[in-house]
Length: 613
Image (cartoon, rainbow, N blue to C red):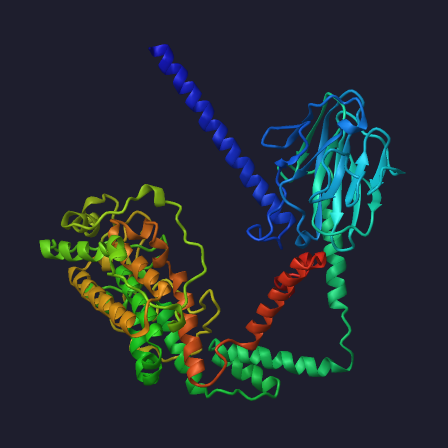
C-alpha cells in the first residue's frame, strides 16, 4: 500500500508540474502575441495559434498540441500530397504577421511546402499549386504562386532548418526566411484572409510550427518597428495646405472644451486667455461641477447627492435612474465606510477605510444584537432571491446609468465563499484589533487633518480634477486622520461602527423600495437590477473586499459614476455631455476598427495612443 501511495503522489506531482508548465507557456504565448500584434482584438479576430484538426487532408497527422505535423500517407505520387491549415486566418490588423516552421525530419524525399492558402483550397495538394494558394518548397527551393509551375526563389531546406513566412498586410506581399535570414519578396498582390499552411508528401516528413509559442529565430520585431516608423512618417507628413491655421484653431477649441468639461478651472482660464478664446460656461458653474466631482471621487456620495440637489434641484427629478445609480454607489461607500454619514458615526476619516489594499484600519465595536445580524442576513439574501422579484430592474431605454468597463480584480476570490453575516461574523470582523499582537495603538500614529482625503489624491487618476478650488471648508467635519502601518490590519464593515451598520441596513431597505417604485414607473431594467444585486451581494461575504464582488469597493469604480453625473450636469446646461476631443478620439478609434475589418493593414501602426504625447 505504501508503494501505491508513493506512486500516486509522484503521478500527482508530475500532473501538477505539467499543468504549471502549460500555464506558463500559454502566458508567454499571450504576452508575445500582444507585443507583436497590439491592434488585434482576439475576441473579434482570433490569431492562428495551432493547426486545425478539422481543416486538413486525411494523410496529415497532428500531435503536440496540434503544432507538430507528420505525414502518414503512401507518398508514391503527387496525388498523395497532403496539407493542413491553421485554425484562423491572418487578421489584417496584424499589419505584419509572421510564423516559423522547423523541419524535424525531411523524410524520404523532403517534398515539403510552407506558405498560405485561402479557405476552401484543396488540401490534397501542396501549398502553391492551386488558385489562392502560395508556397515555398524544400526539395527544389522554388516558390509556387497559384500554379503547378514553380519559380526559382531560394535555397532548398532540410532537417534542422527553420523556415519563416512573413506576410506584410500593408503592401500585401510575402517573404520567407531561412534560419533567421530574409530570402526576399516571394509573392505580391496577396488577397486578404489567408491561412498559414504547410504541406507534406513523402513518408517520414515531420515539421513543428511556432506561431509565437517560442521566440522566433528571425528578428520580426525589428522589421515591425521599421514599418511602424514608415507609417508614422506618412501620417506626420500629411499635407495640411492652406487650412493649417483653421485646423490649429479647431484643435485649440477642442482642448479648451476638454479642460472646461473636466473642471480644470485655472488651466482652462489660462489656456483660453493665451489662445484668445472665450469659455462658454461660467466659472462658478465649472467650480460647482468640480466640487461635486471631488466629493464623488472621495467616496462621499451622500454629500455629492445633497450638493447636486441643492445646485441643480430639477436635475435628479428629471433623471430618476441617475439618482438611483448615485444612491447605489452611496450604499457601496457605506459598506466601505467612506460615505460621510457612516464615517461620522464611526468617528473616523475615510482614508483609514478606503479600498486600497494598504489602507484598512481596525476599530473595536460593541457586540451586535441578534436583530442586527438578522437585518444584515436579510439584506444579503437579496442576492439569492432576486429571481423572485425582490430585485426587479428596469428597461434599458429608461436608463442613463453607467456601468464601469474595468475588469474586476478577483485574484483571491477562490479563497472566500459567500456567507450571510451573523452576529459572531460581525464581532469577528469588527474586533480583530484586540486579537492581533502587532496591531498599533493610537499612540503609534500621527494625527493630521486632510480635506477630501480617503485615499484619492487631488489629482485623480481620471484627470477630472486639478485642485484649483478652495471651497472645501464644508468637508472638514469628521476629518481627524490617523496614519498607520496598516498592512497587518483588516478592514471593517461600515468602518466598524454598530450605528453605521444599522444606518446602512436602513438605507438598503430604502434603496430596495426605490428600485421597486422605479420598476413600476419605468418598467424593467437589467442594468439597474444587476447594479443593485451586486451592491447587496457585498453583504453575503465575511470579507467583502476580497470577495468576487469586492471590486465595487475599489475607488476606481467611482470614476464612471463621476463621469455620468458630470455629463448629466453639462447636458442640463445645454452643453455637450462629452467633450469634442473625446468624440474625435472615439471616432478615430472606430475608424481604425473599420480599416481592420476592410483589410487595411496599416491600421496596425496608426493607434491613436501613439500620438498622444
